[in-house]
Length: 285
Image (cartoon, rainbow, N blue to C red; front, side, top):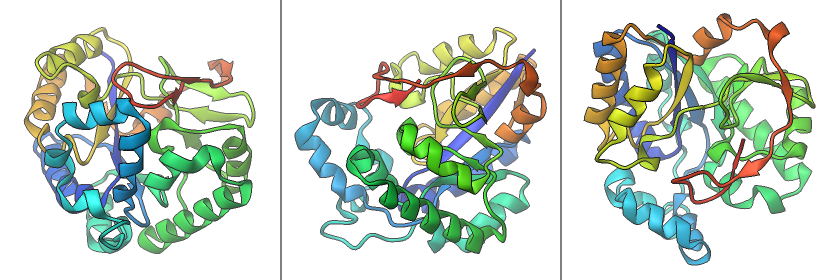
C-alpha cells in the first residue's frame, strides 16, 4: 500500500525545545519513525523582519499561518533585540533522546535564517564556513558526521552542490519533486519532498487533501516541521498518521525510503527554482 517518509525539519529554538518533545510523543504513540533534520547553530529568526518589508508574500504567509502561535513571540526577536540562542546545541540530551528512540538524525542547517535570506548573495567561502560550523556542531552532538543534508527552505544552487561533495553525504533531501532522482552534478541521490506542508494548504481541508494523496499506493515524503506538527497542528498530524496507518501505509524515516530504492534505475535530473503554491519564496524543484 505504499510508504510515507517523514522528513522532520527543526528550524528554531522554540521548535527544538517545545515541538520536538511533542513530535516524539506523537511518533511514539503511533509506533512509527521519522528523520529529524536538525538546525544546529544560532536562531536568528528575528532577522525575518526584513522579509516582512521586502516580500509581501512572506507577510501574507505569517498572517495566514498565525506565526505568533507557531513560533512564540520571543522567536520574533532572536538575533535582533534578543541574542540568538543555539538551537540543537542547546539540547544535547534531547538530541540523544531522538536517536535513542530509533529515529534517523541528519543535518539541516547551521544558521537557518541567514541561509534562507542570504544564500544567493553570499560567497562560496561563506557557504563552506556555514557547512563546517554546522557539521562540527552535529558531530559534537551525535558523535558522528551526518550522512544526509536537507537544505533550509529547499534552497540550493550550483555552488552548494559542488561544495557538498567534500562532505560525502549518502543522500540529499533538498528539493520538492515527485519522486527520488539522481542529481546530475554532482552525482548523488535525492529523496525529495513530494507532498505539500500542512501550512501550505487550506486548513479546512488539509488532512483530507494529504490523505487522498497518500492513499494512491505510491511512496511519498511529507515535510514536517517541529514548530507546526509539534505545535498547533499536532492534532491534524495525528489524524493524518491514523488515516495513513489504517490504509495500510508504512510510515518510516528517509533511511527507510532509501533502503528500498534501486539507484541504478533512477533518472538524472537538474534542479531549477520555482515558486510553489503556499510558499513565499522559490524552492528547488
